[in-house]
Length: 250
Ligand SMILES: NC(=O)c1ccc[n+]([C@@H]2O[C@H](COP(=O)([O-])OP(=O)(O)OC[C@H]3O[C@@H](n4cnc5c(N)ncnc54)[C@H](OP(=O)(O)O)[C@@H]3O)[C@@H](O)[C@H]2O)c1
Image (cartoon, rainbow, N blue to C red; front, side, top):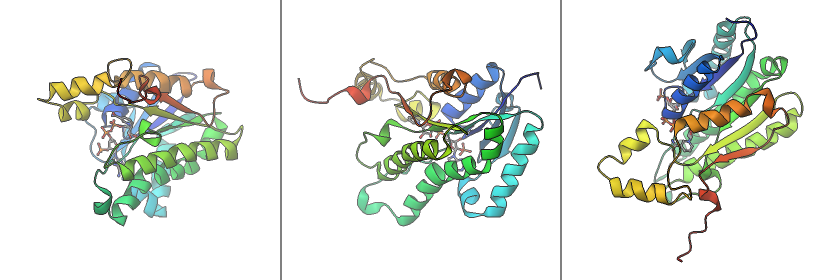
C-alpha cells in the first residue's frame, strides 16, 4: 500500500471492458480488487481477485455477507473509494422465447446485484467520500430487436443510478457510464470473417469507428475521481455520437 492509495472494486473484471478498467486504475495508482465468475485470466491486472457469482450473491444473504466481508478484509486500511458495477449478462432472443428465468437472471446480474453491492459497501464508500459507477449501455435509450432482457435491465440500471443519487444525496455519488459498441475480444470475435459487417457497425457511429476499452476507462477514472465531485445521478454516454444520429434515408 502506498500513502494516499484508494481501492476500487471492479465486477466483471475478466471481461473486455473490466480488464481495461483494472489495467487503467492500477496504472493510475489505485488498489484494484477484481471479481468475475471464473479464475483470473491475467492475475497481474489485480491486487486481489475474488470469485463472485452475482445470481448467488443476490439470492443468498449469507453469500452476500461473506463476499462483502472478504472484500473489506482485502482492503484492510485502504479506503474503498469506488465500486464499479461492470458485470452484466446479455441474453438475446425474440419476445416469444424469453422465459421468466431469463428476465429474472438479467435483473439479478444487471440491476439488483449492483443495488445490493452499493448497499453492502455504503458505509465504506461514505467514509471515503467515494462513489459508485454503474456501467450502463446505449441500449438503455435505443435498442434493436432481440435485446429485450438486456435493454430493459440496463434502462433499470440507469434509473437506479438516478434514484440512488437522490436518496444518498451528498453521502455517496452515483453515476452511470454508458458505452456504445466497444472493441472487446468478444465483440471482435463475433465479427471474425465479416469485415463488411464490422465496417458497417463502425460507419453507423458518426465518428466512423467503435470505442476502445481504454476510452471507457478514461471516462471511468474521471467519474471516480474528486474532479467529478459535483457529478452525481448522471448518465455519461461514451457513444461516438450514435445516439444523436437519426437513421432516416438521405
Ligand atoms: N462491449 C460492448 O460493446 C459494450 C457496450 C455497451 C455496454 N457494455 C457494458 O460494459 C460492461 C462490460 O462488458 P464487456 O463487453 O466487457 O462484457 P464481457 O466481456 O462479456 O464481460 C462480462 C463480465 O461480467 C461477468 N459476469 C457475467 N455474468 C455474471 C454473473 N452471473 N456473476 C458474476 N459475474 C458475471 C463475466 O464474468 P466471467 O468472465 O467470469 O464469466 C465477465 O467478467 C457490461 O456492463 C456491458 O453491458 C459493453
